[in-house]
Length: 454
Ligand code: UD1
Ligand code: MG
Image (cartoon, rainbow, N blue to C red):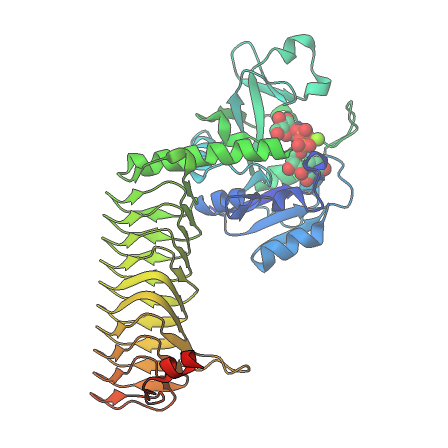
């Protein structure tokens, strides 16, 4: 069965007091609208149409061309929003409808809604939630026998209906053909003069189709973001949810209140995450690692038994048993092998570092291919940039780079070669040779004594 998804994101979001589109505000490193997109993808919705309106271009630019878009020029209601995507809706299959401002919706909740929908052969199923403070939400009205009757909006609700605690979460799955049909029948004869998507349910029900609501087990799933306050609340809930899952799976978080792990991050058993860490993007961390306090790690794959202290690591990989930090900066495309030491104040960029190499302190390595068991003395600089172009440096296995060496790229230090401390190396140092490139020392005897006596 083909499942397509429509995501409503045309609203203005006035209460955000922002110059940018509401759905482009972020929870962690992802925009609000990316979360329902991820959830839709989780349940197999490959084709997704985002309804854009306010700041439409900005939203389209941010999400790129993996989405389809439909423009809703004037925001005349949720039903009107979906009408803009009528060409996207086919005659067969299912259509999921989600909001772009509800980042806590999960793939698993949608999966439950879809199973319920399919098992009962419903024409439409709405995701509901039971909440203590239902003011503002549409209420799920049920008949005496508890079957679904309709959804009534806050502004259209009677006093009795306002007491109902089962609310409309705003997420649905429809049989595609019936959704298209019901949209064609929508009217805006209500208090707000809007085309309510919720009215499609009554329309289908009246024609003898099965419509029902299924309540989510976790009412947080449907929380929307309308203000900065709610953005912070949702971020907090997201943190608690994600951190609990990692702890349940065997990861130690020393201070879960101050640990931020992105929704796509994977962490192995018995790894310890110290306070203040931010783990982002598609980061994967192995087992038995220690990720030290205040480290930021993004889109990086880390092996087992890796030990990291207060470092920043971006778009890179680190092999088993390697130590990084404190205060290391691994910039994109740094591929660090196994059992390596990357020590304090070391910066590495776009380089391969072979197993067993030691880069203990105060070193910059950019655009280099470094072999195994190389030793870098303190203060080595790979001079990779000539002001116009970046060049590569190659260092063979077992080489020894003396302290304060400049390696002016492109240059090669062959296997087993040494560079003398303080050298500026501009030519190949052949295998097992010593490269010295510095002025010879000259001592002027008693020079100081004579100067002082003047
Ligand atoms: C809607 C539901 C209500 C439900 C609530 C859940 C209707 C009529 N009411 O309320 O039953 O309890 O969501 O949050 O559907 N949007 C557009 N274009 C529009 C209008 C809205 O794209 O013309 C988008 C908004 O950007 C937002 C979402 O749809 O992401 C919901 O809109 P909002 O105005 O917050 O919902 P309500 O209509 O108040
Ligand atoms: Mg509204």
